[in-house]
Each structure stands twice: as C-alpha cells, then as structure tokens.
Length: 416
Ligand SMILES: C=C(OP(=O)(O)O)C(=O)O
Ligand SMILES: [Mg+2]
Image (cartoon, rainbow, N blue to C red):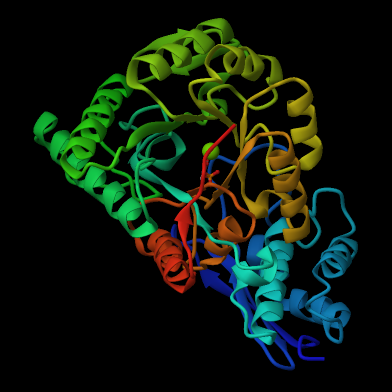
C-alpha cells in the first residue's frame, strides 16, 4: 500500500551540455522518487535508442499520459514487473518508440519512490541488508576525442583511480589534488592554455597523447608521494571514435600515426607497461571481440581491460565477450540498456564471471545522484563519475553522505 504509484510527472530539463533531457517524478502513497536520464556523445552502436526521432520535444506531450495510464495503481516495489511494462509500452527491441532515456528515468524514479515509501535510502532498498563497501572513484583528468575541442588528444579520457585511499573522502580529494597538479603541468608546457575543460570536467589541452600520458603519470606519482595515497593512471581510449573502417586502422590524428589492430594491441600493451596503467577502457573498437581478447591475454593480469561501447551494458553481448575472453571488466550505464532490471542482470552476469563492473556516468549528465546508490547497492568496486563539476560532484558528494550513514564502511575490493 505504502508504495502504490499514485502519480507520475515527466518534464523536460537541461543536461550539462545544455541539451534537453527527461526528468521523472513518481509519487506513491507514502513516497516520492525523482530521476533524470543522462546522454552520451561517444555512444555505442548497439545501445538502446535514447529518444525517438524528434528528441525530447517529440514525446514530451504524450509520454506522461502513456506511462501514467499503465503504471498508476501498480506497486513501485514490483520493479521488475514495472520494467517489463515499460518495455511493452515501447514495444520495440531497441526502445526506439518512447526512448531508452524515457524508460530508464521512469525505472530509476520508481525504484527511488519505492525506497522512499519505506524510508530507506536507495542503496539499502536495492542492496538488501546494509551494504558496507564504497566504490573507488575513477576521476576524469584530461579530456580528448569526442569530449573536447579539436586540438585536444585523440584519447578520450585520461583518468585516475586512488587505489590506496582508506575512505571515500580521501579518495575524492586525492583525485582533485591530481586534477590540480595536472593543470599546473599543462600550463607550464603550454603558456597559451586557458584552463578550458571538456564535457566531463577534465582539462582540454592542446597536447599530444604522449604528452598527456607523461603529465598524467608524473602527476599521479607526485600526488601519491605527497599524500601517501597511491593513485594510479587509467584511460578510456574510446577507440571506435578514431577507427577508420575503410582503412582498417586506428587513426591518431594528433600524432599523424595510423595503427592496424595488431599494432594497436601492442601500443596499448606498451602504454600499460610503461605507465603502470591500472585500467584501460575501450582500447579496441566496438565489435572486435578478438582484438579485445588478444589484448586481455597480453595485459589482463596487470590491468583491467574494460568494455564500454563493446558491451553497452547488455547481458547478451557480455555473454559473448565472456565466452571469447574479451576484457575483464565492463562499464555499467543504465541508459545504454534502458531499465534498472536489465542493468542489474548485466552486473550480476559480470560479477559471477569475474568481470569487474564499473558503474558510470555519461558525458552529458544532470545532478541526478542515482548511480552512486547503484554502485553501493550492487557492490560495484569502481564508479566512474568525473572529479569536478556540479553534475559530477552530485554523485561523489552523495557517496560521502552514504559512507557517513554506514555503520562499518570500507572501501571495496577490486579483484578479478
Ligand atoms: C562516459 C563516456 O562517454 P559518453 O557518455 O559520451 O558515451 C564514455 O565513453 O565512457
Ligand atoms: Mg567509455
């Protein structure tokens, strides 16, 4: 009774790039949940469709009525059933009728309303009896590729992971210390650097990939020494973005270098060994399971080889990856698959096969903090959600609050 849905509101709001997105309110007899959908710039081709043709404006008039007609009167606790109804309302394989961003915002708002109906925080409602592990924050330091201007590096994200942090506060402030140090080093190298940032709050400098790698590595080493908290360099290469399908080469425009798949595998393996990379996401283009598998064989003991565009949070595609030993980690973005139930199924499959699940933001975000709760509830040991910027710190600060609330908090164990 407490969690029976009484009303649903859908509105158009801004995301961090200034694009429209959807926010959904779900009101139950004794609770309220609000969630908003993010959006990607370097999206995987097998993701569900965010919005149908016409975007948010094309659906905003009718979608509230369509969803309300089915969901009002249902119990928000029955999340799996509600997710099935959402998929039925859409009626397509890839959620292209009402959009995966619509379904995911409703799905998350329903879960939050159910939790609120019983006065529970979302991480406890979903995670059961008192989860106590906090994820390590994978913080974005330098932006390139589709997330920055044309003079920035080809590699999309230079990230860091404070693996030596004892608690979440120490972890997020260590990341910020590296972020500041990196700015100083960029400015020392390029007197014209304006301090401009990319979509996820990392610096957007006029540097080659090589220069950015050096600055990232030395900043990590210096901050590790100064703070005593070991912080490791990581990357999201988003390699599909610079794969030339006709030439069958990875095109590094900044350096004027082209690499075939074998050369790309060797290049990434060298980077992992040279800089002690802890984590490399999408080092190989989407669809190339064998390239992923070759790199995982070479480097997978030393580093996490993570699939984002490769897996698109889809359990069926992950199953194919597991069978082919492609990667040892997976990015988890709820709006790539469209509902919380399907997101959870993918996390579960990953965990039972020793793939490290990394809950992630999108490059276009809102101040919605839901993913912080998902990472804790589902024991995902890493969360990728930037280091600075209002829409990024919304999640990081929520983790600080969650840690404060726990009776015996500890940092998660990252093992594979
Ligand atoms: C967060 C990412 O970017 P986007 O949201 O643009 O896919 C990513 O590629 O991991
Ligand atoms: Mg990615």
